[in-house]
Each structure stands twice: as structure tokens, then as C-alpha cells.
Image 1: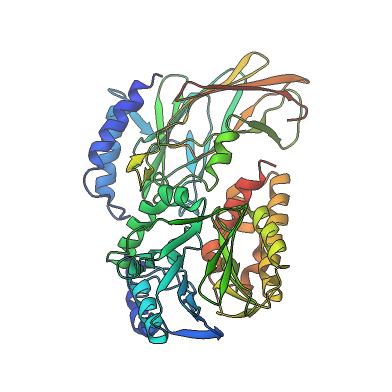
Image 2: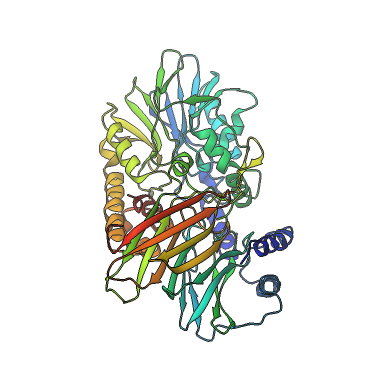
Length: 304
Length: 266
């Protein structure tokens, strides 16, 4: 962290210190979610920046996304115990990004759940786990938590079901989209689709998988028959599928304008400064991520 | 130039990497010492002069993606070749390009990985054997240990595929730019597998030779600092009709070659 970042982090401490607790809200019967703050990880926010929560069945609980740090996960676990004493049977790791999974360590000791992940998650963790941990330890100035590998792998071909007693969740492993290891979870009982970072609302999307693939997966997700969705960032409950319009427009713009830049021979760094600027006022943290998204898109599309 | 010098260079820097990685942009003294050490190791007993307007290097001051930092070199007089050195990378010598008779060396672009806030040095070797250096400071970190791409399997399956794009207007006999793209994961051996505690073995492009109708355009020695799927934009002088032949060889001694009709469908 350089001096400027340190100063900003210090200033944030007073403003946001109240928001790092896991204040969950019941967004549908038995489905509780905590909204993440619209920031990047800092020493004062515990990396509690993603929407995380849990689903309560008759016999057991499923966590979907244990949080951005060990502390964030511990807070979530405490929030669960205020609602129910049922065993935590499953912890879903929606994808490889640290803001969603570094809280997994909070559930290792007492609960001994199955950690549910995409078939490609082990490889992604092998490549990135240590890198993420080192960075996050530095940013949080404390142990961010262990890298926890999934113990129940979900294939793209078959998906899986998680039985919570009187409530069965349907888990889908997606093709390359936001990342190469995205899971979504459908609760048919309430028509609720837990999308994690396959859906961004208000906060600018970040592309780390495949732009074309993401648009394809969204197309399929629109037809699964849910009326409510929980995005990985933004409000914890939105109407489905109407809430993915903004995301589709952003990704569509990124696709069209990056292709145009490549066709015109515009360099990758120039493209990063010019593509999708019409979206600038529509998203939080746009300047922090758009250039990076264009770089990713460019790399994908220049080989077409 | 042989690869020994690269290895010596890497060893020197591995040693200095033992003291804490210090990404502070105010530490100019340490940077100067590093550069002196590098100069002596890469160009022993040779003087490295100021750029004197002969060469300039351009890069985004703050990189968007440390694993893919676009670098531009511009030279303004006849040169034999250019060196690109990323001072604080584990293997600082990113590339050495020697130009052939069919080259237009004025503009060259590459994409590299940057591991820490660092000076980037571009050195031109003029036809009289003198060395001229230009410097650019780049803020980027983690580009070497960062995972290359998200779909590793697809990258390996596609390894060796090439594309050549002509940039701008084609006029026989007039210099123009071409962009060469090579599919290669360019594993640098620095990503540790958290579960096995092993590093993914290094496998990267070591040399690229481009010839146009039998005349050399450039020869490049490269190392682990080139980004995944190397992309090089270079100048050459096209004929009415001709063929660009590209041969790339990686550190596993696998050869990839491809011929492109120029002009013609790339």
C-alpha cells in the first residue's frame, strides 16, 4: 500500500466501520443475505464487499459465499447462529475470487460442511490461491484466512442438488463466463436465483472469464423460471430477469466496441481508454475496472 | 546472443530479490544501483550512453493489467538492434531484437509482464556499436506471479497458432507495420500450485525469427517477461507480392512456424 492508499484507508475507517458486521436480511422465506459495501478490499472493511448469505432448510443450512476474509466468514457464522442452530451442511464457493471465498476458513472447524465448487475451481485455486492470499494478507494487515479447496465438485454437464430437508437447491456449473468456475444456485421453492458474480447490479462488472461466454450463460439463466435474483454485488434482491438488462447492455457495448477497435487497428492500451465510455456514469467504480475489462475483452476477441 | 547471459542476469536478480520486495516509487537511489548492476551484467565493459534522442520508450505510467503491459519503442537512427530491460523483474532482460535488412526498426511494440514498480530501459545499439538508453518508470505489480489466463487448457490446446495483421495502408516498397500474434501460454515458472506446493514448470517462447522473401526482418531472443500469447508489432518493407515466414521456438525446443502471404489473407 502506498501513502495515498494508506491515507484513504485511514479516512475510511471512521466512515465505514459500522458496515463491516454481517447484517443479514431475510430476502425470501429462509434466505438471508448481507449486502457488501461498494468498495475494494481495505484494512478497515474486512473485504466484506460481496453479497453473502445462507439458506435454511428443515434439517440443515447452506452458505452461499462464506465471505471475503476469515473475519467476514466468522461474522457470517455468528449471523447464522442468531437465526438457527441447524447444522451447516454445505458451503458453496461460487467462484475463485477472494471477496467471495476467503471466509471459508470460519466453517472448517466446528461445522465440517461439504465445500461445493465448480469442477474447474481446484485448478483456479491452485493457480491463484497463494497469489490472492498474499495480496489480501497485505491489504487487510492480518491473516486473510486459509485457501479452502472444494470437497464436492459440480460438473457443467450434470450440475447437482443440495438437500437441506424439505428444501432442495439446484446447483449449476457454468461455462466460461465471469470466471471459468462460476456456480449459480436455484431455490425452486421461492423462485430465487443466487447468481453471485454472474450478475452485477450498480457496481461495475469485472470480466475474468469470457465475454462471449458470459453473454451466452446470461441468455440461458434468463429462462430458468426464477422471479427474484441475488447478485454478487449491489442490492441483495432484484427482479429476475429484468435486473440483468444493465449488465447485458454493458457487456454488449464492451463486445461491440472492442471488436470495432480491433478491426480499426486501435492498440490494446488505446482501446482501454476509449471503449464503453458511454457506460461511465451508470456504474460505481467504473474507472477502476473498465480499462481492465477492455483489456480482457481485447485479448479474447483479437483471436477471432 | 546466447542464453547464458540471460541466466546470469536472472541469477543476479534472484539474489537481490531476497531482500524485501520494495515497491516504493521514491527509492530512486536503489533503482540507480540496480540499473548499474544490470548494466555491468548485461553489457560488461561497455559504456551505456544517454538516449540522445536516438531511442524513446513508452508505456502506461500505471498499468491496467500487470500481466499485460504494452510497451512501445521508437528509434530515430539506423540501429542494429534494441534491448528491452525490465529492471525489477525476476529475469530483467525481456527481449533483444536484432533487425535484418528488410526491417523498418523505427517503431516496435511488445506486451510484457511487470512484477513490481520498476524502471524499464530500452537500449538501442547503433551501427557503430554504441549503446543508447531510454528509461520509463512503470507502476504495476504482480504480473509475473499472477496467473496467466483463466482457460489454461484451451491456451495449451491452441499453442503455436499464429496471426499476422498488416496495419495501415499497403504500398509496395514503402515501410509499414505488421502485428504478429503467437498463441503460447508463456508459463514463467513462478506460479505455485497451492495444493502440490510445486511451481508450474516454465515454458516460454525463446526465439522468434521473421523473414520476408528470404531476407531477415528481425531475430528476437525473449525470456519469461513476455506476456501470455506474445504480440509483437514491427516495421518492414513489403514487395508487390511476398511471403512472411515466422519461426518461433520455445524453451521446450518445440518449433512453431507459419508462412503468410503479404499482402494477402493473413
